[in-house]
Length: 115
Image 1 (cartoon, rainbow, N blue to C red):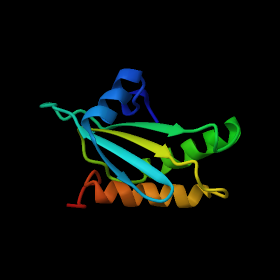
Image 2 (cartoon, rainbow, N blue to C red):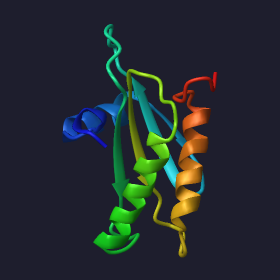
Image 3 (cartoon, rainbow, N blue to C red):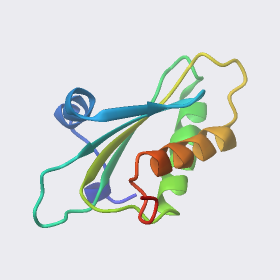
């Protein structure tokens, strides 16, 4: 995922958390915020995976799969989205997390044509 598609600064994450809306499933929390942009900048994404999920290899695998799931969708412009993986489940599967995330993106009307 290219830099202009990523949330990188802590202040960006804080803004989405403070001003945005949230949706959740059993394995993922999705926070979305529609930026006030007139020139239709591309949507940006941030991923949060707790250390409770596993070691760095496991956490990075979750992030890679979630990025791939997002890049395979047609996302509308102007959104900031933060995906947080919940840590309360003992045997969390990567494929279930990415499927849950796509379902939440549809519920949040971030995917084009999901209105």
